[in-house]
Image (tube, rainbow, N blue to C red; front, side, top):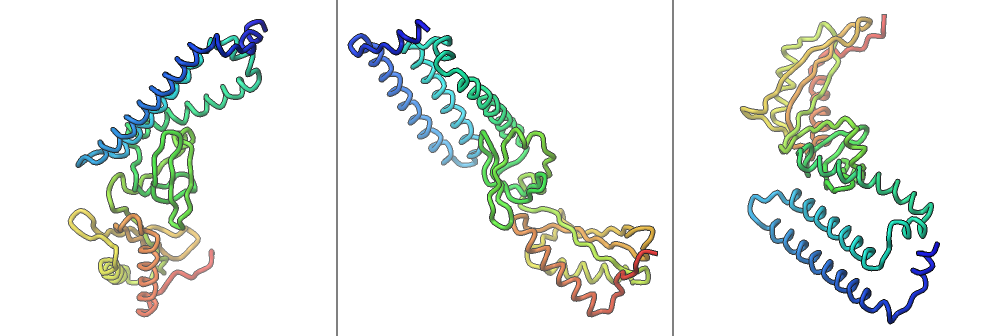
Length: 267
């Protein structure tokens, strides 16, 4: 307790040199922080610059400067680890646990950035969250769902989750529509109708690299019918709305043509 008592026995005159040093450290820290901010802004204006990586590297540099300034300030003030532990007590232990979680989020954020797992504007599905990557930060990743909610996912949790990246940097993502048809349906004719509707729909991408494909699967052994699934590419950021419109148009056309849908109950 002697160190703590000496620390609390504050003498302003005796502390003038230390206060001057602390002030200079803080000013230097602020200057370096300002230089980093301006440098990041300048680098982001360059053509073909990876703005996301530059921004995150700038954040890492600012965190490091903050840590060094804090450490230097404590050192000048004569705060040894024993004094800090005595002064903070249980609060210090709690802060240690919080720092552990913070460090885990930051490290996983760095891995996400440099491994290029997901990028801003990618369409992803993470657990029950389906939407567009809005921002990849050091501590967390922001996802904007298609109903305009913002979901903030800690990077440590993201690293443990199954991440489905629908686009991987592309503007387009694949989507599917399934119709359940009776066995007696003319599947070839139905595929022609579905292909025509899909290819003419706004927001659907059809070219040499992005085609329309079909798959037929069983509904189930106890049912008398088959699933006809169409795969096609769409503008990723509007996928739910495009798929809904195409699905509606397909169903309306099949009803108009009296195509027999599967309606049997399990046998």
